[in-house]
Image: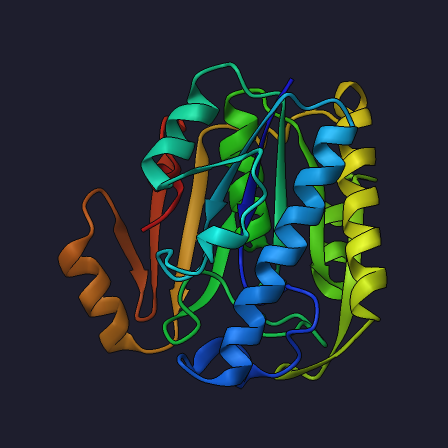
Length: 262
């Protein structure tokens, strides 16, 4: 069996202030990157123990450049954004997982809640339902019949994942206190929970249905300001402006992860 693990930074264990994510080249940010590798490696171990033969991992935060490559699990294979698109599309992947996930915008006590661009994207709505990056991953994987089997992150992210995907395997490694702070569980315990969740996720592949919202998808993006909407209209093709701050696109078929973005 083959698994793909997408990573983000906001939902990593021990990352409990906004500055640890946003202020690069600081001790706090370096700690966050080291914890990213620890969480990811724990998930890789769990996936292997759960039956995965090949585990592909993606550096998904801020365009990449977050992995400390010498710390990466020796049995994990890193792929870039183009590579993971092709893997999901290939029909060879049995399971999709996310490590370090965060909740969608407007989530109460969701640590660093946002979708894609926290400075510009206010709401991302699919078929009338407010959604976030967890749903985006699920839509893309589901379009190719790949089940989304495991999430790690803060409590809000795990609650969101189960609201969209059912009773999938989750490891809640911290809880948000407002938006910009979190309280983390013991770091060693967090790794145990992540490893267990990945293991259980692999064991539940046959019972987790791929996420398949009704097609065509109506995707509405609400921006924070009207000038942000102006800019999106200038650079995006195939979209319609529906009010001062909102644009819409209709997706008849998901063939690439970019299809569900703007």
